[in-house]
Length: 220
Image (cartoon, rainbow, N blue to C red; front, side, top):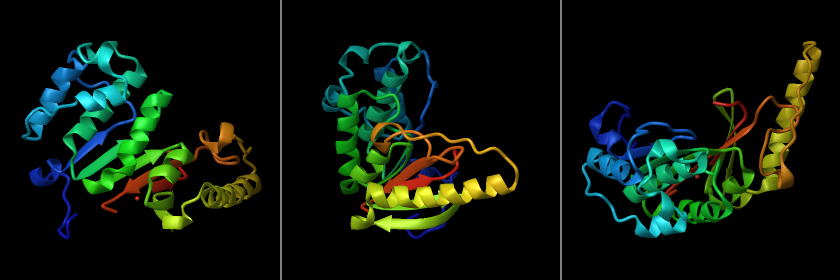
């Protein structure tokens, strides 16, 4: 990180990154405003003005509600608003689209696509659309190893699906040869959601920097 050895325990690095998890039930008795103030203080910053972000995500009715009383989608909005308000140099998003309504998804894509002006965004997603619309670089991972890389104009839904289909076929052959039944799960409408046929689970993940995205073949 920044041409120096990386340690997740180093305080300076902790202050440069923020993680928004797919599901986060921490601080259940905080309201969103209390959580935002707490998070900002933890990073040594004044509480940011989030009025514009709150409006973009349609979160106005929820700002003074306890986090434990929010729906899954609104808890996700609370985490994302906080993440983008803090604007860390390294922003990590785990399944950021899950649970969001259409308006919030559109807002999220705009924020993700423009994050290169602030720092690096690394995200995971099961939704191919989010990868193709926002990523500068795509890494195909399998068993924790980089299998294929896409960048720039190479990042298309067709190209990524082709790689995943090829790997699914190989996995299917291996499982059949081993005498194991092959569980097939198909993507949702438009290929945006779900696992790739022939794979127990397929996940796309992403990285966008001041410079990218990742498909992951196995669930983390």
